[in-house]
Image (cartoon, rainbow, N blue to C red; front, side):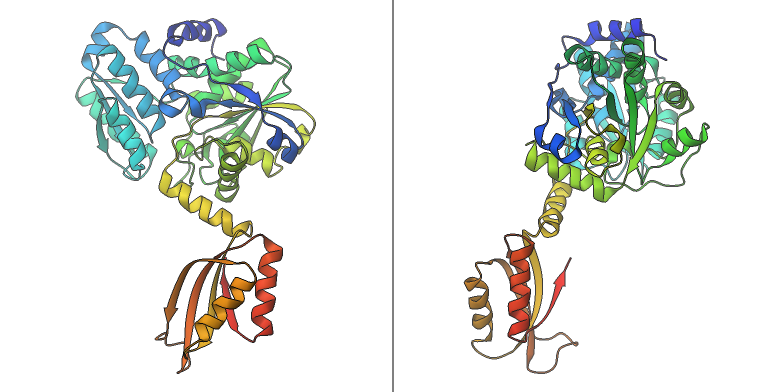
Length: 403
């Protein structure tokens, strides 16, 4: 494990740079999960994620000669912003290699701190390979996002803050991508409160670390696909895997649907914007992956909040449909004057609000003289939607529904 003294030294080093984020009870999440849940809100950290802790600790640990050579990193976004901000504070050049699919909000976040950005590769691992080659060719110092002791020690400071607030937790749930966060935190937890269970949560679409944990050896993935870009790591690191095998008690995974539900829950019920990686622990609790923690005191790390707003809008839209607050219908009408008005009046009488409507009379699937009307409605839940379906059937409308 990472030496506790090293983690405390990191804490002293970063104390004037990072925000000591709140660690507070989440009543609605506790009710939904059956646990007493407390959220460590690293989504409210400076740069919007925990990564500034490890990045700053690493760059602060470098010699002046090393900083003068410049630093380079590969990242899907959060580590990139941490490295960029830390380098700016030390007056060092920073070059960040990011996957080509990186959301614009994260690219802009890096550029804001004065770092240069190169887009290369379809995922983190390909960006990492490019950055490693470039750094070696140009004699720059590579700041690894997770497989570095100084970085892991910086991340471990989160656990110290949590345990200073509550030393009687039964478990702490931590998102896992490359494993730097959980390696640093688990080292601190097991040194200070070894009775606390450390539970890692990975994305089902990026299974390398979970499969490696279960097999107790490195198993890489062929590809990754998940909305949780912060933990979308294809290959398992032998460095962090060794820490995880030593100090992590359990490892579960959540799929994209579960992650999206957790993002929406945190937005609606906790008033928190949390990205996919940061919502992984909440997803595990909401979807009952950790039933043995029922009635226990559980800390959950919300690791970041740098959410792509385009993806967030899609998650919200789908969430409204799944919860019965939005309905998308295609209704076939006789194409004659007054037919559309008759339909909309029926919907008005049921207090369904039309937010979008489109009219199609040329589809080859239609009989001549018919038209399809595509309608998006705001509704008041499943019972309200059932009323709408029943009324359409009663008046013999042919209709289909988009889910």
